[in-house]
Image (cartoon, rainbow, N blue to C red; front, side):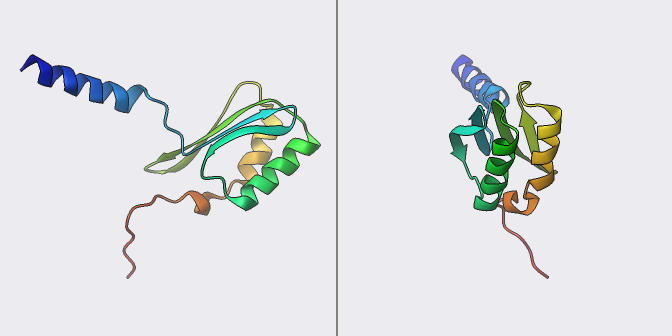
Length: 103
């Protein structure tokens, strides 16, 4: 019985504590260093253009939530750059992958 509780605790810890973004992009001096996840081509183009005009270092993470998507920036990314990236973010490109009812 104890092992069932232990396994349940581990599963709950994994669901809560593990960082699972849909997209993770790292920047250094205006260049994309690494990316992981679904990065739509139009969004990549716009972010690259923003980074070339205003070089910055930091990290961008996109999380899928029930209410939509959430953009999370590291503290190194300036507020003005964050707002420019939010303005070009394609919300329809990150819809949930569940089944849709058309009617």
